[in-house]
Every structure is written in C-alpha cells, then in structure tokens.
Image (cartoon, rainbow, N blue to C red; front, top):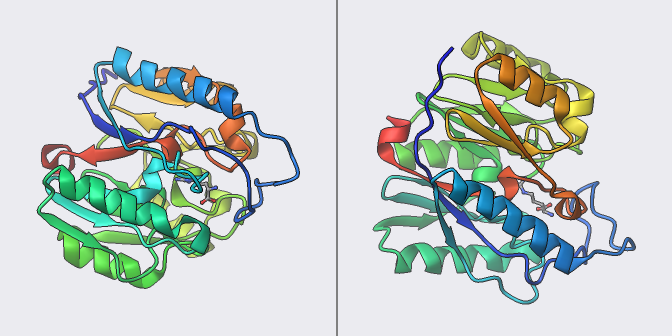
Length: 274
Ligand code: ARG
C-alpha cells in the first residue's frame, strides 16, 4: 500500500531542566541518576528527524522547577484554531498548563480554553480522521471527554486504561494515518478493547515487548513513523504495512515514563482532522 506523508506542525520543549525529581508513574524512580545533557542530546536528535522530514517544529521555553515539561504533548490538544489547554492531575505539573496557555494565546489561538476537568492534552487525546480517541483511568477525567467533544465538535471515543505502566493513551496507542492505529490491547479494559476492534478492523496489534519499550509512543505523518529505536518488531510490521519506521533513542527520557509522542504536541490542521 502506498502511504503519503503530510507536513505537520509540532510543538516541543527542550529538556533543559529535565530530571526525575518525583514519581507520578511507575517508570519514575527519583533515586536513579538522570543525565540531563544526554536527555538534551537525544531530544535534539528527535527534533532533527522531524525537520529532516520537512515538518515545522516550534518550541516552548522550558521552565526551571518543571522537570516534566519536555513532555509537550501533555500541554494541550490543538485542532485548527481551537486549543483545549490541559489541567494536570498532579500538582507537580500544574504550572505547565499556564505556560502552554500563554504560548497558545501569544500565537493567536482565539478559541482557547483551559479544561475544567483533569485533562492531560495529547497524552490522553489522539486525533483521527473521524474521531478523537480519549484515554481515562489514570490521568484524564472522563468528564473531560464530554468537555472535549463539546469544545471540538467532534465525536470523542472514551477508552479506559487499566495498566498503570500505560497511564496515558499515547503510551498504548498510536494513530498512524487517517484510519489506522497500532495499539496494545492489554492496556485497555475489555469493553474498550472491543470498541477498538470494532472501529479499527485494520489495526496493528502490538505485544508486551513492544509496549514495554514504549513502541506505541510513536509519531506518524501518514508515511514516516518516528518511534523508539528498540521497538524493532513494530518497525518490521510497519514496514510490511507500507510505513517508513524511523527509530530514535530517547532512553534518558524513558526514565520519566515518556518517549517520542510524549515529547511532541501536534498542532493539528483542520484539514488533517476533517
Ligand atoms: N513524567 C510524566 C508524567 O508522568 C511523563 C509524561 C509522558 N507524557 C505522555 N504524553 N505520555 O506525567
């Protein structure tokens, strides 16, 4: 199958203040040393990959005291001129939402709102052609799903996550093109698994090993799929399905429970989602 890449617009945040200073997911061990310089170098590599693919990368200034701010996906969900800014579950990350709100306001997003219920942005909200897939169970409040549906005027499909290792939707599911996803079924409740099977008959089903290296925390432009370098099985499947997998090493950021997609907020154009 021939796949076509579409140029994308991403927002990233340089991990200048990256650290694992607290633990809000099972991957974070504050007693383990973190190499901030290595995190920066790995992140620069990711940014270069996007630029070499012709995508636009904007950055938001990293703030001291916000060690998780590198995970820009969590700051908001953006489609066209509508931006729904996050409301973080954990106090440690609350200020990131303010920074994202200011960034989006300064860029002229007119339909800008901060979520009323806990909503962790594109960590839990993934945009497909027809729907917005939304995760709950650990972070985003299910009431934020209804809020997002009203705000974006798009159907929101609510999915329940059940494994604490895969606490955001983007750790267990990747949107690859307008109609295709890859996901790790075990991360979802039985009902949500059935919903995914019904909606995505053509989905790539990932195994434990792929999920464990954050293979599903991937970013696709419709053809090129940027994913953790050690997700080799998934890379093989992607190739067979006509995608071009590009591995990057973000091992330092995985110490905080994040990888490629977590570092990348997509400012979706309406055409991409229409
Ligand atoms: N340490 C961060 C947290 O637990 C990691 C966020 C990962 N981001 C994501 N989009 N999954 O909140």
